[in-house]
Length: 33
Image (cartoon, rainbow, N blue to C red; front, side):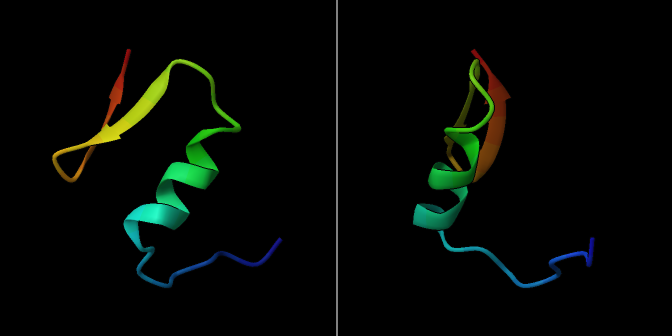
């Protein structure tokens, strides 16, 4: 799998995090709930 080195927008990050329950994106940081 090729690494995706693009800068993600906040919306893209939020969508990706939906695949990882228990994590959230807030204040430019990904945090464990």
